[in-house]
Amino acid sequence: MSQAQPTIEKIHSLRKKQETALKSLTLTGYLEGTSFLLLLFIAMPLKYMMDIPEGVKYIGMAHGVLFIVYIVVLVGTAIKVKIPRWVIPAGVLGSLLPFGPFIFDHLLKKNLQKSVSKEA
Image (cartoon, rainbow, N blue to C red):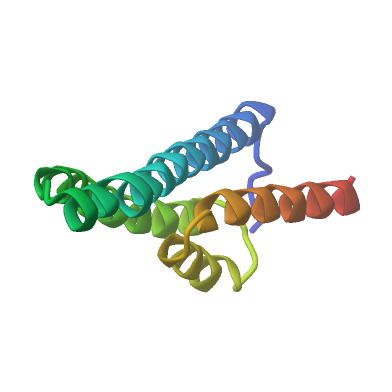
C-alpha cells in the first residue's frame, strides 16, 4: 500500500499554520514581556515609593492573564512547529525574567533560521 504524497497546497498550508503560530508566540511574548517590565519598573515603584497601589492591581492582573496566555501559546506553538526540546523550558524561564521573552524570541528565530538553512 503506497502512502499518498503531500501536495504543494498541503505543504504551503502547513507552513502557513506554522508561520501563524510563530507570529502569535512573538506577539504574546512581546505583550507579556512589556507587561512585566511595566509592572517592575512603573507599577511597583509607584506602589512602594509613592503609595499608589492601583498600578500593581491592574497591571499585575493584566500581566497574570498575559503570562497564562503566553504559556498556552508557547505549548501550542511547540506542538504545531517542529522545534527543539529546549524551547518550552527556555520559554517558561524567559517569561520569568525581565527582558526574557524578547531574548527568547530572538534566540528561537535564530535557531529556526539555522535549521531551515540546513534543510535547504
